[in-house]
Length: 276
Image 1 (cartoon, one colour):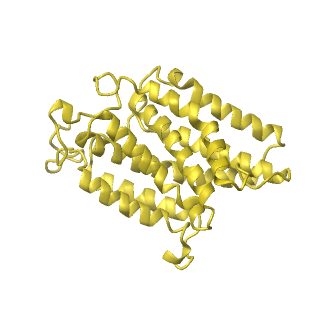
Image 2: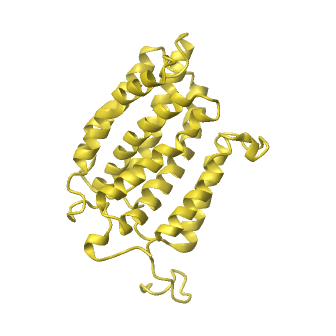
């Protein structure tokens, strides 16, 4: 029988599991960003890395660090039973995206599989980084809502690069604001289910749905991308109109955060526990 202070192989005592401090989380975020920005700014790697290699590399970095340092509070366990029914509105979004793709004639099998293979790494790396590591580090330093908003705003900020490097500043800002709303949904899933496995799955399906619909529109001769209007304000308005109900519902789901009622939360300064 393996004791709590011994390794599973009968070796010496294991190190106790400790939370990741905020400084460490921010340093890891910088390392993660350098890995994932290789696609957005090809000059960083001489064009040697192609999608989805940067996201796969970022995932490997995060998993290696988790294996070495054994940080707690990452919420890698199974979702709490019965929590799926809370997310009926986010899942309706997925159903609407799927219905739109089907209505436009669907996607070729090879395109769908390639899209899914690329998006797996995006979902894994972003959920590990933001909802698995960054949020609990922020939460131990700040009260609930500042930690929630900082995590979601940082998540939105990294999506600025999706169009910024090509000079599509309005589209980049629209996608960034939409990512803030989606980030709130993903964080609500962690907090209410007690696991980041559900956010990983939702993130994967969301990206497949959004990009799949984009490809389906292109195959039908539609305008490239979600937002055809070149006016940045119109792009932002359309983007927010699409995702704002989802984000508002996520805020409602998180209304009891900080009261000890949400399984995915961690002790914060209001409990007398700070972050290193």
